[in-house]
View (cartoon, rainbow, N blue to C red):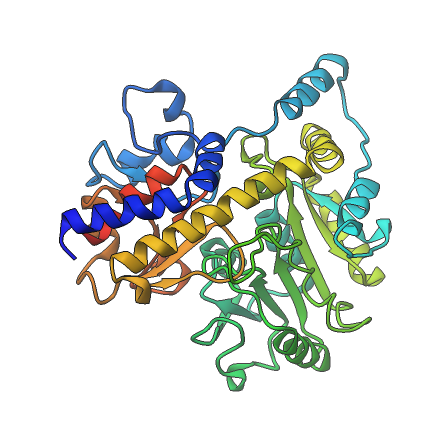
Length: 407
């Protein structure tokens, strides 16, 4: 298809999807480009470090490498935090456990308030769990590809990562023969970051059974669970907590980490994070470790969590619906460009996971940057040749980025 025909075909798609795209366009910021003269944009990390981390990317590049959304959180969240700061000082004791159980209950997940332990951040919590329940030199299985800092949490604690690779369709573990019964823990993102995949209940049950048989702790990063879609990109309820849908006791050796940071776009204030630990023995040890290292969630992040969980579920649903629109739009564009074979767009998250090994040779990150699209480097997820793009952005940015990459 020549350029003119392609642009005409894209215009037809946009006409078909006009109402949904208009809604998405109203919620997401109009541009996601590196603009050196814009002080406001430069305060966002995805823009401020672009010229140092991605030196060959031109100034007009779309910055799609970081996992945040190009939308403003509900204004009442900022008002709640501001009001709290104006009227409170000193150390604070804010209990968010009931807010969390009520939030989870709406989607059918029933847990007890005492299961919950607040934590400063998910990555800090995972690293702390490894230090608490494993020893230096221990082997730790990591379901791959996965978010790079999870590998770092293993190696920086002087432990040895053992990769368990997802299958080609990302719904199962490719080869359980690599399962190492001598490992002390297994770490995974669920839903998976970067692929957006969800392990099937059968795969979860098999993995959990093996871990339980060998007394292996499962540590699950679940921060993208709210971004869940069916095959038509319609919003679904959040992904069930890992192990909670496969048997009453399947989660007894699981620590799940969740956060408001992704679901409500609260990275700017360190959205409150928390661990869910059903096993009382594990929970007691983890609470002691949190106390010892002063890694509790900050009071202002707890206030934001309470406001978000109590009052802004509809806002979150709107955002997820618009991301569903962006997913459908991206798939239509890639189909028109005859590049649908490059994409893995699974059931969850707001990422495109693209296989560019046949398109570019050499340094794929460099090739994307030179084309004006700053992407997440799949090599950091142990998947060289792949890239991750955030599509929690304005639809025109998605179109521009895909045209730059493929035309």
